[in-house]
Each structure stands twice: as C-alpha cells, then as structure tokens.
Image (cartoon, rainbow, N blue to C red; front, side, top):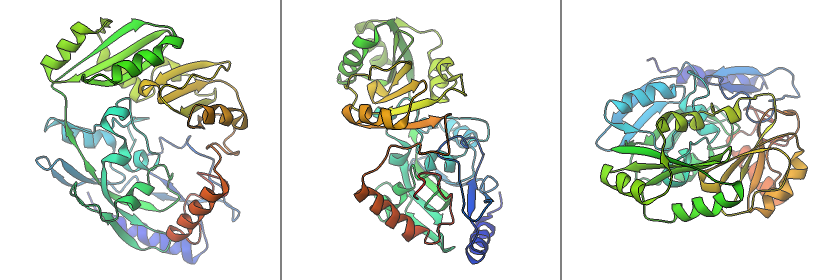
Length: 358
C-alpha cells in the first residue's frame, strides 16, 4: 500500500499555518468515545488516517510487527494467524474498519488484559506527526529498546490529542495450543473473592468475568495444563466458549446491546466491593474492570470509584458535551497541559476530545 504519511504531514502543516483544528479519524468505529470534539474557531477539518494502511515489516521469529496506523485489525490478525501468532491484548473490533491506531489511541484491550498485558504494554515504538508537522520516531522494533519508550506509551488513551500516529511497532505472541471455558452460577457478592482466588493460583487462567449470575473462567495454554486445571476446578465446560469471549472482546454481548443507555467503565481494585447503585453490572478482568449500565452523574460516581481504589468514565452514551473522564487534580492537569503544549503547541489535534480543558 502507498505511504501517505507525507500527505498527512502537509495537511498538519497547512492546518497550523491556517490556524485550523483537525479531527483525527481512522476507521471511525470509536467516534462514540470521549467528548465531542469542539473548536472555538468553528468546524473541525478531518484528518483521515484510515487510508494509511499496510504492514511495513513482520518478523515472526522476533515476534515483532510494524504497521501503519490506519491498518484494519482484521488484516493484522489474518497475517498473524498464518504464523500461529496473535495480538495477546485482544483488541476489540467495533466494526470491520477498526484500526490499530484507534485501538492504541483509545487504549483498548480485551478480556485477557490482566494476564497478557494491555495494548500499551505491547507497543515497542511509534512514528508520530506532532503539532509542528515534524515526523518523529520514538522507541524501536526490538523488545530491549527503551529509547523513547515512555513517549510511545503516552499515546495510549490520549485519544489523538498529542499527535497523529503514522506507524506502530508491536510485540506479537504465539497463540495458545488449547483453550476452554468453565462456567457456573454464582452471586455477585461471592464472585470477586472467587475470581481473585482462582487468578492467584499458578494455573493457565487467561480471562475471568461475571454477568447475569454466572462466572466464566477461560483456561488457555498447553493442552495438558488446561485439561488438568479443568478437572480440578468446578464449573461446566462451555460448548461455545470461544464465541462467548469474542462477544465480550468486541462488546457484542447482550449486556452491551443498548447503545442509547449510558455505559460507565469503572477501573478499580480487583477485590473492592461493587458500589451499591441501581443498574446492571458486568464484571471483567477478575474484578479490575466493571461496566455499569444506568443513568447517573459523573460527579456522583467519582467518589464511589475513588473508594474502590480507581476511576470511572462515561464510555458510551449520555451527554458527550460534558466531561466524560474522571476528573484530575490540579497538579496532574498542569502536567497534562504541559505535555500537550510540547507535542501540540497550537492545540490543533482533537481539541476537547479528552477533557474540555485540553
């Protein structure tokens, strides 16, 4: 595929000289996340990264792949599958057009995140267009290369407010030899202790969640280890376990079906008690990630999240013109504004998408 990074660079330079603002778009499948981008100067111009696609380099033996940011996840996973490899952070597909750049910018990882690591953990390096139109490289393509590694990680969850990623180098891993899912009935009050106890055992557990009165544990790895653990632990083997976890990964499970009702994401301590509020819950990551479906105010949920040792955000639905991310202390605001000014001094990229003040 053609390298259009120069075209993207020219568009950034034109926006800067014309004092315009840019809305960065890849596949467009995550437009519901974050605040609605806004600009005091009026409408935002679209910077389309979705056409900047292609696998730049893939070294199966070194377990490293470099791709352009607009490359669809499906293309990456198809290439990896041919070599028996996979993206262990299990990126969610919100549509066929979901891209690796958007996944990293939104810091999205699937049900195996506590065991396999997040997308941020798998990134080795990036190429980035900053607000001055400079095309910079951070990190590298080898696992021991730490030059600029933290700068690469800053892009995870920044929602495109710090620059335009053009290339991403990732760690990839072999797929498991065997996998099965155990399921059993369990009350929500009991499941946190149960999941954390299981997760603490030296067994091949790779996912644990609870929804609708049932707890699901996924075992993956060497066939002998998976089968031995399944015999020892309680629960029935789920016939379509792989399809279940795919529905959780892509948020296609029926719990997430109502796209109009506000969906809140709690990132909290895995053993913390679930807040007693009216609504439906989906507990994932052995308790570290909890989805709450119901009408609420961010200001009312933040104290509950802090008590549970974490934060809360409005993931989908609700009022996108208001703040949707957990509020930050003034000291952290100052740091974030300084970082923003370093990468994007004129505030060109996705203004207001993460916070109204950024």
